[in-house]
Image (tube, rainbow, N blue to C red; front, side, top):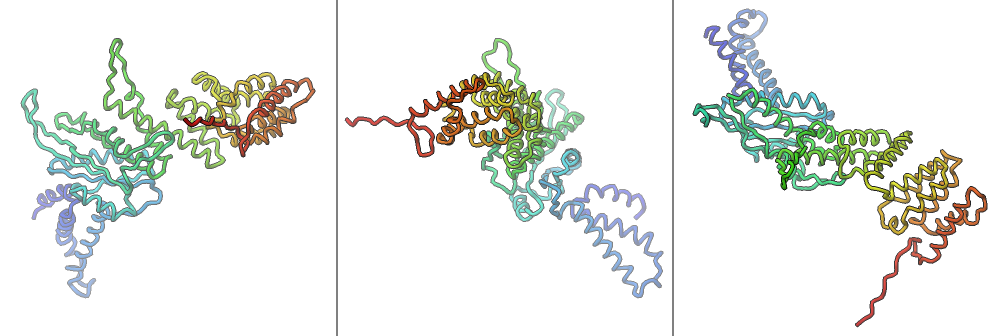
Length: 488
């Protein structure tokens, strides 16, 4: 065998390396090199027995090559604690000529993902390593300690006739995408005010994608396939992380998928119907998930820790992504409170005004305005806004009055000049928690003859008089008595 034959074999090594044949190809080349250039240079005096350099060394070389092959082709996996998700990609291709093209495109997509998201591990397994979804699911179950989820792509390729010029073109098409993971994909997962369903959301986001690669249009189609794979892997990873309750990383992934231009719907003047494309629908769905992830991660941190900076920053970031949305009112109310807790009073007032402009004088807007009049020690405005609170409506609302009272108790120490107004507000809000306690507090204002508190005394007297006319329940909250129907 001459040097030209050796070089021809070496050129084929990358193509065969990931297959079992690759081990023997590399081993054969290494043996040829060993016996041609090294074997004779080793003195027999160095070894007691001739078979050591003739048999043992080649065997050791084979074992080393096999180990390198086994690890480099991802046939063994280890759990990495630094990774939040380990993602396997399996490709089944019907023709060898298409392998290198698809492999290069997917590898580029994977390198972009792992560079952008250090906590995601994406592994491309050898082409045709597993040839059915059943074998892949079995493989996943056996390696659930190091592999979380997989995507399986079935690729078909061949020549097709171009209708415009009747020339033959090489076409590669991804005909089937299957997802599998260590969880129930049919189950709904709640995030804030939305439900995520893996199967439904995958169908919405990926069925419209063009997965065809034409060699004659390779410049455009390469970029298209790379982006499709990147978006598909990221989208599926984001959904999986939601199911695993890793919402912070899921949020970062869906931020990377956000494209405000794709979700814009153009309304044609004079047209009675508005057509929404599949791409716009998918983008709008991603926006909904992203919005709910913003709200969920921010409020989850707020309610489970003393951290007010992170929730504030996330809701501010959310506002930058979605200046107006279906839940803007609550978004503004939450930001108003968080801005105040982060020491930005002017911004708290601004967000309260935004909530007012969005939905009018709703209870939380009024409650915020009442609070601002307290810390400003503005008694006239305090009474004005307090009178706007409809007690009948408030008793049926989902406002957490225990939380509100606790908040006022904590803030009272910061504003000693406004202690009287804090106490009155606390007494008023106790109407919806414990009316006996409310009476006890408001009774302290009744008959107060100080000029500056005369208006408060009148309001307290008015509230107490109203309470005396209403029946009580065991916990002090008023309930209406149902009328007895006469029997026929």
